[in-house]
Length: 280
Image 1: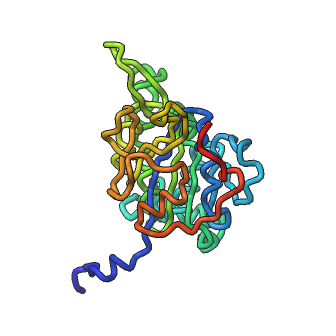
Image 2 (image 1 turned 45 degrees about the vertical axis):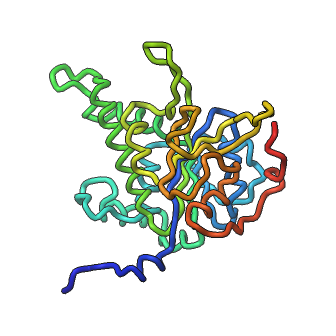
Image 3 (image 1 turned 180 degrees about the vertical axis):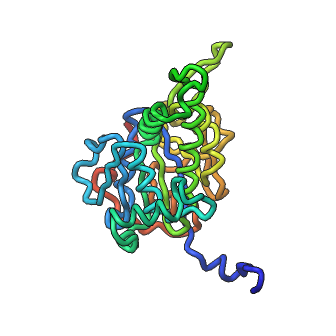
């Protein structure tokens, strides 16, 4: 048995995929960005029943309603986690159990993108489940203990999202709401709207790209939509570009942005609803 070295040629020939957090204020058009992706190869994971803006989008959809349902979906989409014990979520035993319910994972071969909308609602589903677990009860009194629930929430969310992030042959897009806050000195800042602090703090480190869909202003004061991509942006938006290929402001087209991240030419069909001047 030899050391399992992956040669440079093998690595360069591997299929390249992006893991992206797409964030923005409510109504900015985050969900509608799915129209810029190939509907035949995109799986829409709808956790918030928020598909009103894309009712005519002709792609496939899954609608997990609880945190256990989402965990089952993650292990089915990503396969078993090698380090998980048999009694833990995402283990080989968990994977086999879910395959007994959902069938052969080969049915996922047609998809190259998972579009998860939204992390904000998903964190609420997870927190509701965490509050029912033994870790959310005080050992002394047996009464609810929010500290334990929040600790479990952070662990559950990061474990699930990190495992899904390790799917090497699929793009994974996580949509989340951006919220504006002020600190003790009345300074404005922005952050992901998620239950608990752990997921919001750690998720950007897990993903390749953190993109903020924002309403910006041109030099003449005309407002337009654009993707803010860099951590040192002048707006204070949470953003990050691990690829190093993106401009500071990119056009609001997720399909072409993914192709640019990967150094490819975008050949993505554009839905008529997106074929419009970005000026508001």
